Image (cartoon, rainbow, N blue to C red; front, side):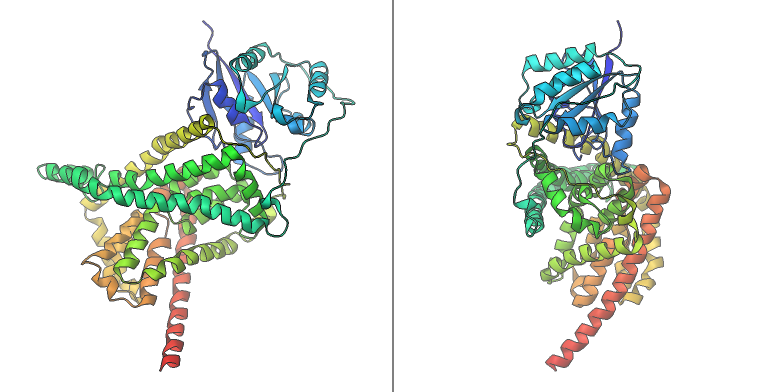
Length: 556
């Protein structure tokens, strides 16, 4: 029996490839997580009758050197059948541009037009022209409402696709008036960006805060009914095994805390992202904010990974695969510096509260973003000039379907479980061994005297070291019921928590960056962030003391 053939979906972003994939595979989750934005890596699955292996590729970008483009074209090189997925509303211009990419010569291929329900009445005439001139199967579908007969027809046409020795020339195609999506408040030339920013803050701030509250409610039960019994049971184990499995950084202890605080944020934010993708909001919002982001050496496509970083930096770094190659490094750098993950947000809230100064939390978050923006401007000065400005392609707005929403959530969960969580557990194992061998305390003793340069107590060194391992490691500052924090003045307290947050990305994030971009990028990111953090903390110290002096003069 011959093995199933491979069909690869290739097209521009927002063409509907992921929706086609989910329908043809019966909404099953493929072997890789998806993201355009909606596909971060290729996703592989079997059609419902197990007759074809289907691959969903990232959307191609013509004017940027994008990792997603390279993935798409690489997968096309290994395909038995190439399916060019094109929006029926822009059938002529998008298909012509795809054909110029020279990815179908000597291949079996076909054309699949999406958005059939929104295409102009002249689409059938254009399709007949393409069938005659290209001599390949051509079909149009409404991917969001595909019938079983429509699904079978697409698979039947895939099987019947034939190879061509050379690409046919298209001459005098029929007149085709493209359909542009209607404009919204986000597209307004004056206040559209502000509306997009407000919408974005609501879509991401609410899930992050909700997940934080949810995890906070569950944590006492986890401590009492799971972590506590495990620690008691481990008291009779060998010391090394106790450290690895049930110690402060153990797989059964810290690993469970990692899941408790990371998974709800990923799930809640994933739900928010799924809604924005299903409705088409995401493309409209990122397109509206693109001009502002270019001043930060980023573009609209980098926005989703940056915001995801406020839930989980590891997942955000994985999502940065959808960024352009010339902006990915700056995007990851901002994630590591300015995107406070759920652990960091929870820890800093706790520390400011213990010190009796919760009002410092909002200025702290604002400063992370401001210094993070300066960080990019300093270390990536020519980034914005390295890429051509892409015209914004508005997507159609849709009513979300439960089937599409569920499929996207399943992808997000699988990505977290199969890619992010193994990294968390690996770092737990490494950290538990470092702690068992006594290296943590030794390191803290060596850096303690250096803290006096920033007016900080030497006993804060251990918390700084723990924050390098994981951002909620800074909770060590709470030792002694927070007496050390309460003894600090507002300026010193702010600088201490700022340093613990930004001195370097946590070990889990650095390891993910190394895995994604290599050792040199990971080490370079760590060095640049370390320097920015130390310099900005020094500036904060000087400015803070000056303001204190001015305040004393005014009140005195």
